[in-house]
Image 1 (cartoon, rainbow, N blue to C red):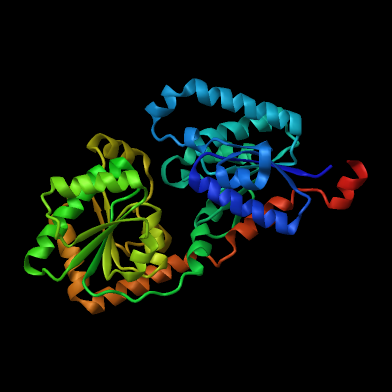
Image 2 (cartoon, one colour; image 1 turned 120 degrees about the vertical axis):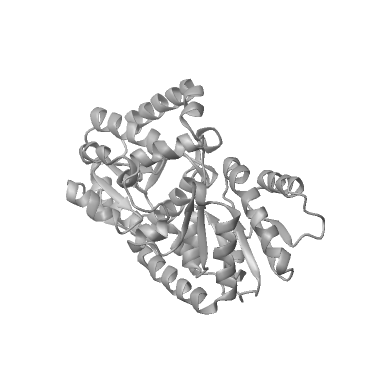
Length: 384
């Protein structure tokens, strides 16, 4: 009987990382079996024993989760029963902390012999360090993607391995593209709330910059057709005509990060991608004031930008809340465009910070760490 790894991912990004880890495990140990829950990529590799649930599972916000409490409760106990029936050697939990940490606790209590590995740490180091002792009790190993996470968990008593960030592999094979003079990238994020809050601000910045410099062009990639339509609606409401110097594309964010001279980017993973591709940029973050004030009470890091956290200092300028306005953004972007020395200095600094994400092969290293908990094939054959 083949050893089994049970995996749980609740979002498309987790599905992508889970599938890449599964592929690496199969190359190393072809006899390994899979079960669990994820998305289409994980199901394609794992077959019928891996359910595709991400369309239903990927909800954001406390209220949205509460509205679907009965759904998540039913899935939780279904998966727990599957684990009871399968008795996997290892449970791999991929990001998705609200659900996965509860699952880890339940499995630790019900099936203490099952090893529990967490891949892509919850960012408790930023907002909830009080959870770390519980994670030490219920997890066997943490596989982290940021180097500064390893000493935090390791010093608390949890075996931790820094495997490197998945985006390093994602971007490593890209062919270099030439930078286009006077091209500014606008990256308002991949959620509707971000589009509504940040894209009008970026459009007003573009309008101001175009007044005295009509040669400047602006491009904004949309993460989906639905978001592209939302962004076009913002463009129309802002009063831009058909010959406006602003182009909205479907996808192509990495191409734009390689072609643009500079950019303004919503806080998130895109800021890491831009740094890895050597794009000078400023960061923007704007939410409801109550949300921001509550976050300030909880978040315990001096910067919100991942590149700045990696560097341990402010490398990229962060414009938050009241400072997130067209005046500040225009000044930052025009300095990039007009001062090549400043631009190149920042390019070197973001590349140096992004280099700390590790070498390619993160999914391979994660797979190797999981496989350490599986018995050797000869032992399986003897006792299966």
